[in-house]
View 1 (cartoon, rainbow, N blue to C red):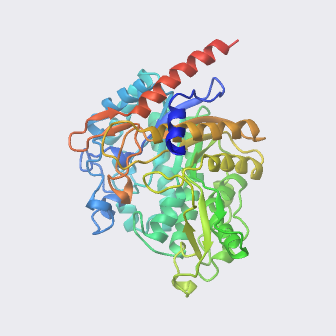
View 2: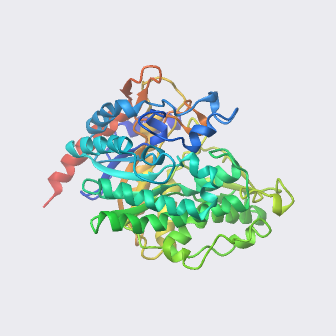
View 3: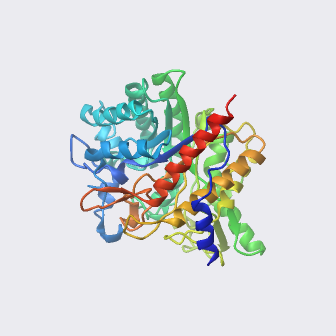
Length: 476
């Protein structure tokens, strides 16, 4: 029996690790990945609708126009969540469904969809965690410059305040942005995600304005929802490891860490940009988009931090693709990512290293005194099998990462770990990769829309039941 098969077999009978009785177990999705209903009830176009029409942009020329049809099948999804037995459901609101052009009055038909969803969750005792931006910028705002412009940050704050005002009587937990690194660097510098740009100054401006929009939205949500609101942001974080022990690879790892991690954690958690970021981008940008007072807004105190972790990154030094800094994209930092030898991988080839989650959490607590409480808002394993059968690799993945996270919670001074959300509830549209990768606890037949729970769904359901019995017995 191989080590990976043996590990999966052992995980299949393992209990969930010991965590506090108030720990939040959840699962997550995002609007463009599951909803469909792209042309219904007044929804406007998003940058992903447009990007998916670009030849070669998405595998299989796929789009989220129908996706999992959750716009019509949301009751099935609520049944799945309730049957799983988790405490909470993290989902995102589609900005163009609420405000078709990104500004102006709310589209009541769009709001009604989320109103019904929130009601159904609350009726089943499931706590809604609402993400306000999961990458689906209204195309009308992109036509005006998108996240490169300060105006988009203002419009986002308006939108956030309106949604919070409409749902705050039932929604307590709010996440402003999901993974601003992906929205800015992957979308505006690498071009792999919408809007598909390959820019330098523009991508760095997008990163700053996303964070500014977050800071303004924090204030808008609290003004609209009152003191009971709990507001956070979700950042995708990965430890960056030098590919070798050479000085060049160590420097490459520091560069990648600056761009991926600290460009976002330092402003949000410490109210400052990290040393070295401006030197890294000398000649690429003059950072004229920054203004006095921006960092104070960006660094406003949070009620929690969401951490998305999937895998470690291994960095090797490499030449710039573009020698002229003035023409260089913000993703061209002289780093080549490599795969480690002897490490198991997911169906996407991502290294499976639960220790990286442990290191991420410990590193946050050590670097940022007064770190807000943390939720793991995404952590998941993709497979490429198009069938709802056994998925022992996913079971082992969840068990291993939960063990690593709880070890960090015990060892990390200043780390208050409040919950874990598995990504994702159901298989869905995986952005530029189309419908090939499947992260879900439940299989989706995209032709029929039928959801079928996988073995990992049943495993987690049974372990949650056992955990609840165990924690009730230990209550005073």
